Image 1 (tube, rainbow, N blue to C red):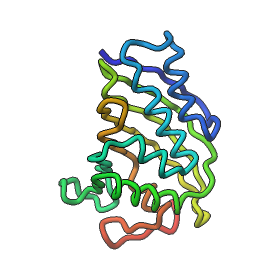
Image 2 (image 1 turned 90 degrees about the horizontal axis):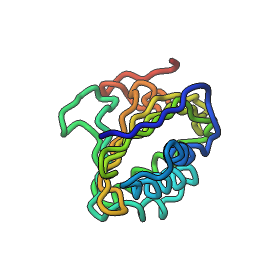
Image 3 (image 1 turned 180 degrees about the vertical axis):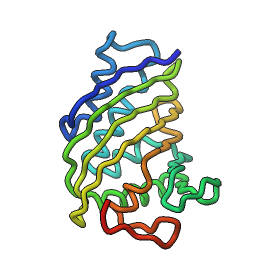
Image 4 (image 1 turned 135 degrees about the vertical axis):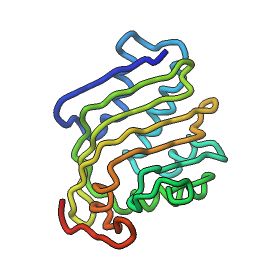
Length: 180
């Protein structure tokens, strides 16, 4: 059984990803297996604060962060970005935080929780201005696989063309975008 809560409409507050979790719980109150909520809420709070220590404390020692859709255009496992263990995960988030500037808001949020609360999907759109001055608007689908009260797998799906532009990464190894 999947329990889903959705929000649609224009951008909402910048810090509202943690609020998305709270509103999901408010549909019928905390449900059986809602132990996932403090973990996912804590994840979003740590990301909003760019707090690497808090973020890594939510991950298992052997955690995986996977970004299956990359600017390379390839889909084989060797071509996607995978970060394993808290040291690699810390380095990934540190680099991401360094390029991000101002967050303007999120929108169209949805939370889906699998039976038992060990797998959670969060979908939303986000709008940022990068430190470089480039506008960044993307749609995300995040997958959290939990082991106890920690994140064992975090998988982030997003539009890699938008990301390539925002982070000035090459597409297919050689194409760069000046605008979208």
